[in-house]
Image (cartoon, rainbow over the protein chains, first blue to last red):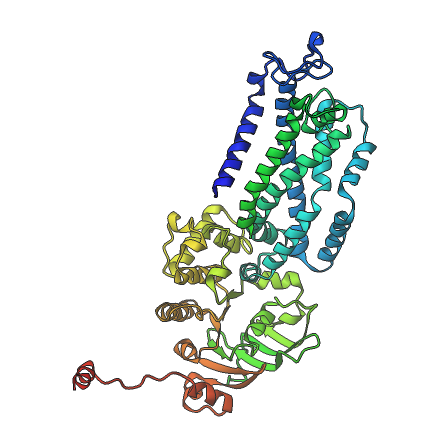
Length: 269
Length: 277
């Protein structure tokens, strides 16, 4: 692991650690309103100021980071599992299964992904509880984001299908699902891990996009998307630079993930 | 060849052709008796592995056309359903492939791989399974302790990996073992050990062996009979003695002529004295 990758890992650990320590670092919570100090600049009591409802921005950034950094890996896990089942099985089964699965995958890949997400989220009720909105966002990202990983896994499983050890297993009488679960899937692990890591920054950005449009995690629960939505009303960057903290954090975390996953891609290759 | 009154264990009369290509196997006829070790010799691309895959029903029937019959223990393998073939694979007909390290699953421990091969055809308690696995490993002169069973293929030597493959193949005491270039990837000492092991297993269990190889010399060491495969057809078949002493087909003669011979080497003292003068 290079120095850059170590630094990126350290940044991710620090951000994740801070977000999980939000209960101690910002004990008042993300929803408490300081009505006498709405839209306040940074101060000793509110390090990043407050928003227009008087909520502590530092607390909201910490809790929002926690939600985004939990949501994205969870969605990545779901999409990777779907990709393993759809793409992996298609590659292993070959023939008509592979053609059908890859036709569906190509269809998904050709769709404008962000617009599809927005449409799908807009079709669902907006007046849901914050917890339900988190689950809905996570499911949408996971269920719609499997296609590119499925293609990679299909190609990997196809090559494993003609490998000597699969032929040897078939010659031993092992077949069907057991051959897939026990002999093909364990050998897809490096590719699965790489796809999982690659998906995380993609889903962080997707959640942020949904949040900016008000289709992500519902208020009062914060996420990076809903925090970025606040930038809509920003007239001058120079006047209130502290409002850019969620954006800066997003860029730093996504960049760190990209640096870390470059190592994962090498492992998968 | 074989006596007409004795029904062979395996009788092959088959042609295999891939779409829009010349036939890989052309009216290939060969018979194997119970308990016999038959060597199938031919150069690369002559159709040796295709024959092994055809017998096991592992060729993709959508991509190739198979004609003829493969009679094994009274039934034509080409007429069996996939389910019936699966019941035979590994239980009555076993396969050992050329490269042991690629034929073993790199992601699974030896114990898991042997357990999988056992579970494909047998049910029983985990203790029974482990007992059979240990017995099979002992039969191929491998350690059967937990430490060895926990190893991954990458943690073993090529010779050990080949023995594990053979142990896997003999787990269910098959009537026929197909060894497809099973010693080609091994060094000469390991090759000799594995050949002795095949011969010993053949003697102790009565298991017939179809020993496929391009190496006539290694075949000569263990086979009762040798069939020479050339361009998809058997051009000559006879006892090992006949093939080596009196080869009648031109290709067989070429094969035998191509065998390496050790030239007489002068003693080291003579070489040293010659270089001094």
